[in-house]
Amino acid sequence: MKRTFFLKKLVRYFGIFFLLFITLNLHAEKRNVLFIGNSYTNYNGGLPTIAANIASSLGDTLIHESSTPGGFTAQQHSTHPATLNKISQGNWDYVSLQFQSQQSALSPSYVASNVYPFAKQLDSIIQATNPCAESLFFMTWGRKNGDASLCATYPDVCTYDGMQQRLRESYLLYADSLEASVSPVGAAWNVMRDSFPSIELYNPDESHPSMNGTYLAACVFYCTLYKQSCVGSMYLPNGVGNGDAFIMQKIASNVVLDSLENWQSEGGIPDADFIYSVPTISYQISFLYDSKRYSSSRWNFGDGSPINTSTSPNHTFPNAGPFTVCLEAISACGKIDSQCQSVLAGPTSTSNFSTTDKIKIQQTGSTISIQNELSNCRYTLQDINGVRMLDRHLPHYTSTFSLRHFAKGIYFLKIKRGSQLLKLRKLANF
Image (cartoon, rainbow, N blue to C red; front, side):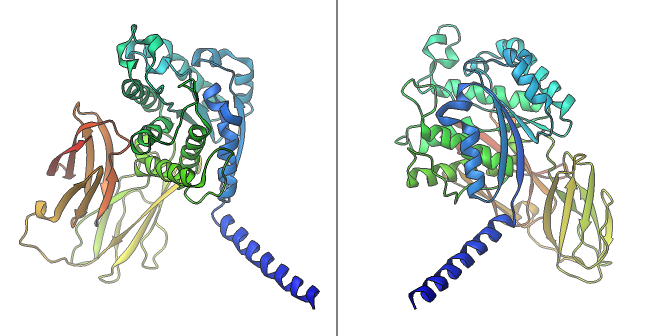
């Protein structure tokens, strides 16, 4: 009797485990990543190992190698035999590049002469043996109280905020100039410091990461590599509590996914997007391909018609719809991104309201909500110096984004339809 009861329980638990296994592996993805850096990458048992454990807990696979000698600069890595040998092994999906922690925080002229040329050289070496690999720049964090050792030389690094801002600018420069991507660890670090100062991210030396800091960095890398949230990972390294882990998972996911295009705007990962004409009585709609970093495309118009591989097709729907139209943008290396929009074919009613009345913007703290009743609109976010921070298609419904990971200050939100400026709104992030 006891044996029968035990067997029933075993079958039940095995069934639950099997279902969980199947669920996790429905979306399972594999990444091959080479981490090039120094102690910021290999501290606390190694960020790559922790990121791999997070991936495994969520049903994904991260295969990794590292070249991380202590204190190494971009220049040293560009001629280091072990680094060059690992790059030449090939078959990498991503190569993470993390440089000496102070150099990228110094003046733009210093960075242009002493860091950027070697970042460019490493990127060229990566592409020569890994033409489908993505160079992924690891945006590091500012020191806890700024860098006193360089304060007299370059006052911007005297404070954490000043140092973090320069690191952000430098790593985005590398990525934008070299058509690469960024893993925004420093941006997530900034949000954590502002929102949860009681969670200690630093080692006592105020430079290297605590276990919390390494865990946060690993969460950011998971979200960057797999383009999905890490919230729900059950993996916890020693020294990281459940409550703190959830907070860090949430912040890492928000920072990466709320502004994904900001971190990979010039990389090799496609970004699917499209706009379409106002429907006509003939049920024909013109679709305009507005994607980035693509080689080919596939359109599914949701009406049973064959897949269309044109760039910007005209399509006649059989009736008034609505129809869910999906576009896949495919890179030369076979990477795919997709977007779906609900499209209503047929004549549309006119409105007595002006187009500007159909867009409403609301700011609540750092969260910006846009309620949009129009099609074919885009919005851009610029800082006070005119630097573009975001540039996105505006969906035909309520959408949100957050200012939390941006530097404090004034921003301008512009919403346009074609060349027509519909809304201009000043936003404050303090």
